[in-house]
Length: 263
Image (tube, rainbow, N blue to C red; front, side):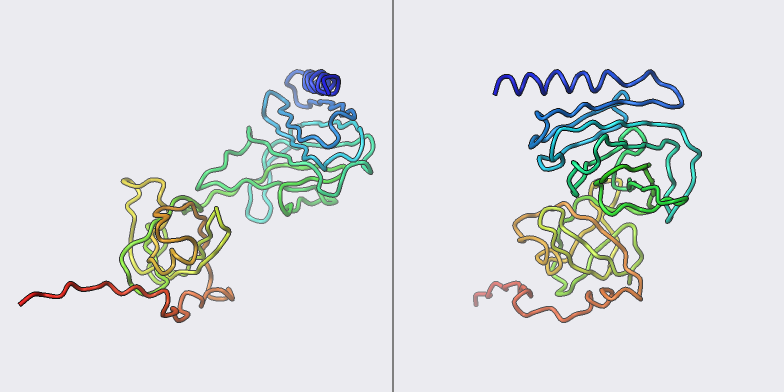
């Protein structure tokens, strides 16, 4: 066990220092011996501008991966601005890499936040297509696509007074809009109708939306108070658009009790 850990440590260092000095084209070689099989490993190469993560099942046997980074002209695809760097992944034996592939990121080119979406694009012939997910399999050419939004795509959500509807207050979307809200923790979603303005962004910079308690409890127990969510506006042609107007079950309607007056 000690020997295996030692081999892993030496090989990891050797793989990283093989990166060439900064230039229009750079390359790094990852020598992945048997110590990497069945092990989760993370490599940050090219001075941390590229991150490659191997899951436990990424490698079927020892292998070698050459990663080349080169400058390319910027372009656009599917509404994304494609970055000015391209990565080429070349395996010595592509067959010994599982179908789950490896996680690839270029944090030096795109920083994810509530206003920015970073996605991988894969070279497909002469075109670049949006990669489903963030896993790259086999030999490939990839680059980062950046899409900046005019609204917060994620943040905190709280609940407010009982309106007995799947409604919400938003500082980004006009009244009458339908928005799909998804809990980051549970993955549960609900569709709400915007019927009010708020929360005030200057006072609550991390709050993306305030939900009526009916909508909030679609995602989490009321006692959670504040939860992390993502939001997505829906067009009228979206099949989920009308879900905000669906009848609210009686079990979700909370009636405030009134104190009886004493005579």
